[in-house]
Image (cartoon, rainbow, N blue to C red; front, side):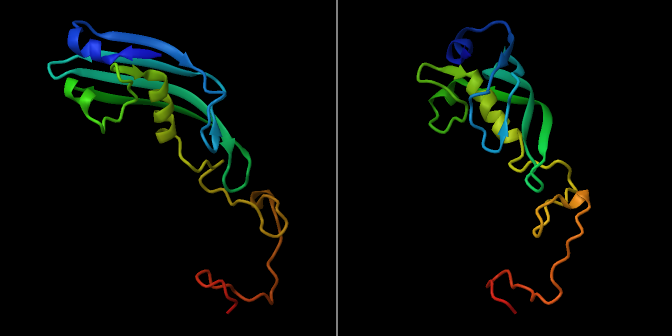
Length: 162
């Protein structure tokens, strides 16, 4: 979805609002997936300085727990606010996804905000114990493995046996 931000900044007299869904099933997010369409609302309101914009996103992500590899499904519901002035469009460091004609790529903006919102490490719970390094089973499922009594501790800095 494209929003003609440059035209809006130059000519808008009334607010703009749209609701839409974005499908990300083919997009790469690293350690998580967005399988259902994200539900979004985008608004832009003219101000004396430029435009006050708001993006509201509701999305459900799926991935694996970084500690025990169990499936994780989390819902995210967040809003981002932006204030854009006409001079921002000429700034080479302007961070919103714009093309040379001054159109904002709202779909790309939703993608970027999801990347920032979802933690890089998903956990099934904050106190997940992970997997047993001996048998590979989930520690929370009652793994009773014990490290060998005669194994020497390892110095994590030099990786030498003490």
